Length: 391
Ligand SMILES: [Zn+2]
Image: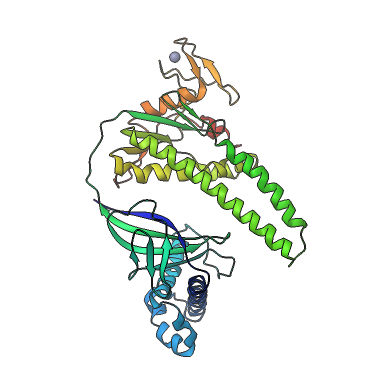
């Protein structure tokens, strides 16, 4: 089975030439994106029909004659931007994203080379830019397919090289684990382990609020404002990196040491609507975590299953199956009336999620298998997450 894996490296373009060249590539690519968007909007207004990627790409040669400075940019980089625009339209039509908008200098800066880049263990060759220094913290595997160069708001440069590689399908015969995602702990495992929300992020967020206040007190256009803005951007990036590091480590550990990872299928979008919980949920990165588990599972011969969110995982006794309908959100511990088993609410839920294997499994995502929807019969909105929806 073929999969694509991205390898991201920090690159160090020199100040005199390469950073300027990259700025030209970013700028011209942005110009082409906006030009393509404008053309597609106008075409739709006049004819009532959209334009394809090919139709917009055919306009490039003429445009380069009219605007010779466009030749400073790599032609494939410009074509790729029109492809990005096309993808933005597809995402819009499929309901995954809003209508494409014009880009400005504050938009995310990224360009993609589909070919003609070369990677060594200390440099990468980028057309129109040259050999750029790079730190190869791990080697790539497979065939390089494209390279995306990006610049963060704090002024760092990265390249992400996407490679295609062949993976043999196997299953690892390790035990299953149930994972209960929650607000008290980031995750509770059926093994009894509780994974706390990363505490250092809270501290960093406090600092971020302070810096944002300081930024708002500076004068518009002043040097101090520029400095303060940069400080905020640097900290933002640091927080995002720390969160990503935490999620990667946890998802790696789970898929490497288990045959099946069962997670509750959370309605995160619905939960974020509830304001009091929105911050801690959107920060917690559950969705990212699930996606990470899914794409990593193939590499370690494990599978990831989502358990239907209507399954009353918290209220069901994992020993005898009794359903405790009196359990409220604030009850962290409870004793079963039937079997007298004593339960920690989250661990009990995680064990039920682990044991839940046929009815109610909504999707089985192991190495690209089809998603097979089934419905859980009975049960109601009872898990701690459902109650948290403020319904
Ligand atoms: Zn019981």
